[in-house]
Image (cartoon, rainbow, N blue to C red; front, side, top):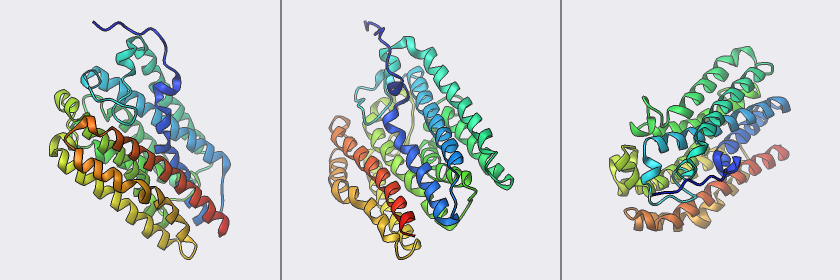
Length: 314
């Protein structure tokens, strides 16, 4: 019989703060591209959209942990690690469940207030984008795992993760700077979502036995580990091509974006080899998961840095 751990995890642990790169990269990148394209920068709008994004990501992480616990996925996951799956904190500390609900709900309220704040700076013609993106993000944050929608269990989890952390996040950042569907924004939209999706796909390979047993039918459960390994490689190759196309579009100085490909040159071949070799053995994928998170974090940082350098060179 498991003895309940009465200690209190830190707030950073409960919200899974190390993965905030998944939202900060598109918010910063979308803002920078909007400034490059439009020529002006509003610091207050930038701060507002950054807090809004962080709060929506917090709600997503916390609701995911809550409903993975309540639906049994976290309890039966034998291969959980810091690079995949839920945190498992509620399993270890059941008494924090009410606090987790409060964190998730408070985060959505703060994001709502940020949306109202952004209306002061966003042109009225862009308000439908602003509110549509907030409402859809709030919906995804809870119903990625929560009943009755349970997107992750119905084959829509991968699409919603890509869409939320790619097109939606980059667009709301651009909208905060009064830029909408500029070609540079459109070309950048897939990038960060693909990077975050890659983490999800590797996580699904590791969590496959638990997901299958609990009825969380993502792509790995539906189509198998070999297919998921191939899909992982494919989306990463698409991301590489996407960077090259965006760099070409941005003109003579756009080459600077190619520094974003350094983590792929350094770690992607090894990561892919491990995944293809061990796709059916969850316990053997921890190293690949760690390398993939490393690629994601370094790519996210270099994407932002390269756009800052590009802005300075213009």
